Length: 328
Length: 289
Image 1 (cartoon, rainbow over the protein chains, first blue to last red):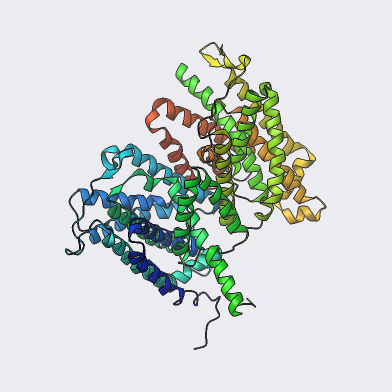
Image 2 (spheres, rainbow over the protein chains, first blue to last red):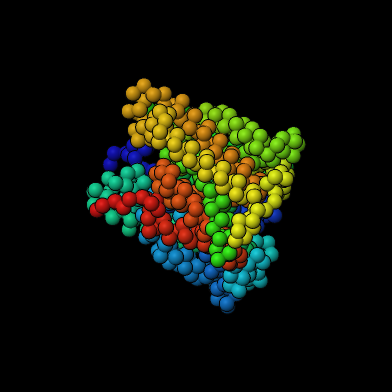
């Protein structure tokens, strides 16, 4: 079989040398920085959330500003399940993901007919409605106080959650690993290629007889399920869920993380989420509004200079060094 | 009856100020096809500028507003040349990202210069009182704002429908390259229209400051209401956006009046329902087939 050109739609999701490096680094954190495991766990959760968003934006081309609805629903579902006595972690996460998926299946057929500004607007509004609902329904969500005191049974009946956060970190890493490879299979499948076709030219896909809206809805449901799982993991690893998971800033954060890393590569979040969280952390030490300035400037620079985010910049540098892809 | 009149008057004055800001965005979006999420930032800058001019330079209210509008228009010309020119051919995602980035920068700058709290605005003596309209008393300020808004929107409508420049803008909205080929300088038209749009935003932000309190998060907080009007008015239709703005203003005011706890719901649910029902805009003609 002749090698595929590097820019082909089928060659983009092959095994990459940088991947074991990333997973190795993620494992190395346990030994090198055991005191940062709690932060590391929240980074892993955000990476997973960005992954779900990349499936929607990078592959289906759906620009939603309300994706945190599914993250938040998953987070609250996991919290409420645990408080109701369903303390088994893995099935709790799956149930939370399923609830998010059901919600997406109900909303998708209405929202995904729209494109452009109307789509941005309606997803923004849906996000705000859910935020308002969560903040008013104090009997269910605890309102501003959130849900606390969430306790889980030991993982697989054997591993206690412990004080040092090893179990939580590895648990989140395991979910991320599993879902990353699942997403990669989805993107490389005929369905995934059809999604990219819709992203590039939906009128043409429709003329070729592809069911555009059903495809988009399925992508929306899968993406929502993964986002819900990410939310559930946040709840389980923090033992707490607050209104922040539904906030508009969370939707914008996930967009910025993805763009910083690089859209439509699946790896965007793996670079973007840690970088964004580091910038936010250090810049807010200097001053409360300083990070906004940094992020704003970074966004403009990334769009103007670095097409394809940080990964795009890295790719161009390595291409230059190895002399590859010059004629592209 | 008195309550109804109160809601109508409040809603109309509120809606008209929003309409003024939204019209600026509608014009720039219709002409340049840029999803300009930073539009609210220009309105906020206008509001802050006029408030500062009144408080520190002791300018009278109308003069401060005019100066703020001119200053923002000049500023927007620079921003257009530096940032927006690159967005005309960029993807929708890039436009959203860059304009959100601008919002962030403006929010940070406003917080840095004016502090994170709400900036109090003082009305001049002549506007601060109330007047008896026969069925109930009403703030002079709101009546003046309503009249000014109607005058500005009317002038804008006349300008677009009846003047040569308006005709050029309408031509460029319909077919940019053809307009350019006819010898009309489209890039300059873009710059001027952008400045006009941002000037309108500044006017709305400065005049509406007592209704829409000035705080650093202004660009994000009121962006949604502005976007609601823009999204529902369809493509570049001034009359439609006035209608939509009235509905938004009245629904928002009524919601706040009757159900202060759940006010935020109404406007968003209204938007979601309308967007699904009429995706081309509220007053757009239905497409056949």
